[in-house]
Image (cartoon, rainbow, N blue to C red):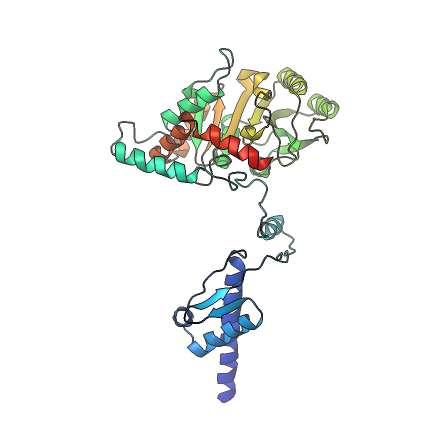
Amino acid sequence: MNANKTNKSNFAYQAVYTYLLNWIEALPSDVEQRLPSLRQMAQRLNVSLTTIKYAYSLLEDEGLVYARPKLGFYTRVCRSVLPIERSASLLDTVFSSARQPGMLALSSDAPAMLLSLERPLLMIERELARRYPRSSAPLYQPFGELELRSVLADRYTRSPHRCWQAEHVFIGCDLRSVLELSLRGLSLDGKVALVESPCSWVVLRQLLAAGMTIIEVPLAEDGRLDLLQLRRVLDTEPVSVAFLSSTTNVPQGGMVSAADKQQVCRWLAEHDVWLFENDSYGEFCFQPAAARYRDFANPDRLLVFSAFDKVIGAEAPYGYLLCRGHTEQLRHLFLQRAFRLSPIRQKAIAKLFTTRRVELHVKALHKLLH
């Protein structure tokens, strides 16, 4: 009987120790964190105070926590790099690496992590909610808030020949959903897609989900496409759609020249290939007047897509697309999906654009990114 009690006691403190160790590892390592009191932890885990105290003392001996008289236990600031867990899963490896202090995962909502507009966005949202408690706009807008769609159409219009209307803009809950509906609406599921390499993981993941065959065209160190290989692929493969970055491609950070973009658009038009221009990082090009693919592309075979979170932050996760052709099919699919997006938040995002808050914010981000 005594031996059984001892075994149970050993098992209890070991389980508590493991629980606390996992908890501490999940906390930020660059700031102190106060841990629950002995009594709180004992009640939570349904064990004795003695067991909790012993587990805390083990952590204290290892230098992971320390006691403050009359205040409790605190984690120690640790700036050392955590060991990266090796796993057969690429996602597990990315997650483990992203937990290192000061690290960000590619295709996350960085660079908004460096400096976000979330606080101004929420302030504007609260102000709008007080000012317009009962909006006269329709409660159900499956393509997105009309005010925000109009702002995006104006923002992308650059000339009378390269203009957009609100009816060409569609807003969804996130970028992945927008891409999914775009591929389905244009009957591109299962077709051959041409992408630049390296390509955004978000884009690749959605192409794989759509059962598409993916052909990557490598980029040179200066950011230029391998035009000879691109031409050979277009001549020999049944390519239906090309995914290309509007300006700066990520993660390489290079930029294709205007002449190369114009040549690529000629070849895509010759082969009747859809161009999906990825404008997710279009705001972060250090050359404001840099040419976009949409300046040269066939407007009837062009779709531009992006998301707000790269600039504003996680409080603005909505994805959007602009497309002049096949809008009836897109309307039908967006009606079927029936996104339920906050009208007030969309109005607040529109306000950030119309008051030039986004423009000034991008300039501040450029200085950080330099």
